[in-house]
Length: 210
Image 1 (tube, one colour):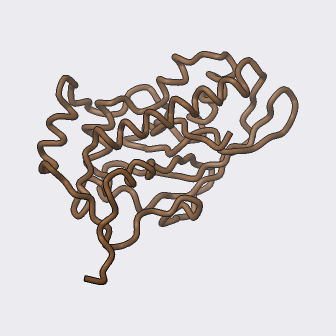
Image 2: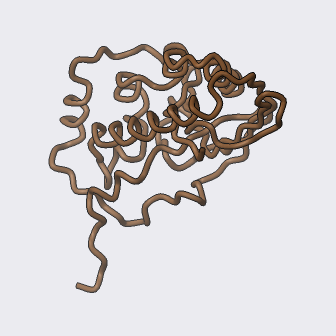
């Protein structure tokens, strides 16, 4: 059979949730991040268990949240809180701005494309990869800018129209933050995607290009 075989499961670990932030102006829509393209059409992830069982196992020991807790009322204010936490070198405050396991398992992943056929990826695998990249990104962020005077100047990002297939959560990715660090103007990707639900915005994680 000349057709290519489905991509092995381990390759899916390289596909992180794209990271996003919003500007004061409506962001332009974007179907994918050109620097990190998604899987090709037709790729399939082999699933040992049905998605219902994957979700049951992942959610075990957690309580279904009614909404996102903490966070900020908008992506812009969320970015400002990230800078404030980094400036204070407060890792706890920084971590509180990202999704919890229960929020991911109950509110976000069920609306993600990877929860539906033909992918049906185990959320535990996805969450593990997100957490690994997020921890590394947070460490880099604090090492580079922790303790400095940081002021937000603006954020630009793109509406993510590919990852989420549900209607309860929106996502923005590819965020570039413009800020001042100890009097010097800088810009860069400081964190990952931002999800919004019922007027609350939180980070998927802190994967960055530092």
